[in-house]
View 1 (tube, helix red, strand yellow):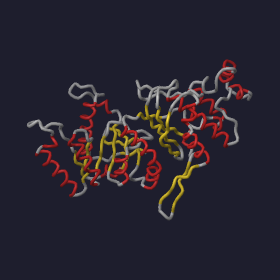
View 2 (cartoon, helix red, strand yellow):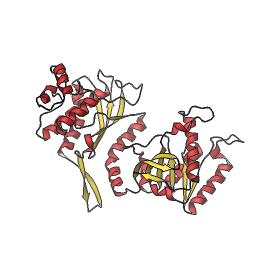
View 3 (cartoon, helix red, strand yellow):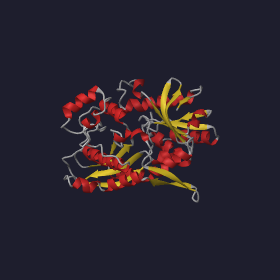
View 4 (cartoon, helix red, strand yellow):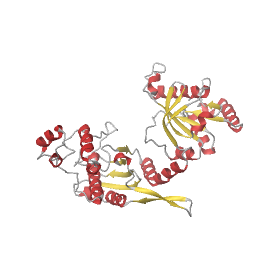
Length: 383
């Protein structure tokens, strides 16, 4: 079995015990090998059509419980989707195992690689000895040395470091490389509601991908948007950065005088009327991190009523980051822009509370919201 360079991103989580996970695998080089969109002119839409490889992978996923049962592992699969260049699946571990989640995923990935190579008429490279590729006169010296040591031990992947694997694949070519990248992503299920959301996300993934193709201006992902001296990741309607007027919504958790929840006070009601009036007058975007209850209420109202909204979040927006369904739908309607500052913790402590605490992060997000509202220059979008 291949040994991945993957390290679980949830430190301290028991990957041998019970649990449910949303698994994401990415095809090496992002090659669109698993499926493609087919236009449906009658419905003015498109459907996701699997390639033969995609069909084989989908079937392999469904067979995972039976294959793992042979090793004494009880697992269940709930949903999967083969997007053109990546795979999503929800897997549940029913009882503690001798294997880890990583072992199960690596076994699935190795099987998928074999399916891919068989489809190309090539021998499987999953357990390929290194010595096979050292017969060429131009094999690098380090590969010959490693082959001499490991000729009768283990597999190619097991006996190489990540850096060596990359160099090796450059030498032998794509056909001997695993179908999927070494790494994979696992999202740990928190509760039953989260499990249902995972399954719904997998079922809805093709529609979301199609919307991103049809609505590129509303569903843009930019890793670097420069606003003043700050750099942000962004997802959504970037045009909001050019709107002439932006209004910050910031609410304390408690009223400073009455100490009642702020959203229950007359001051909140008055401010809400002012925010709504500004929106209805046009050319106004609400800006808020939606941290306190009052901010959350206004943020949710904007999304429900289609009011223009810039939402700041603490979690970074990376190359493959996507919002959850509610915010994704608001982006698709063109009514939402999500901004995530890079190096948020570099802004420092707030009230002597460490910068990496939720308290300081959220206060710093409100500071950024104020900066965005008062910024008079042109935001620089680096795609």
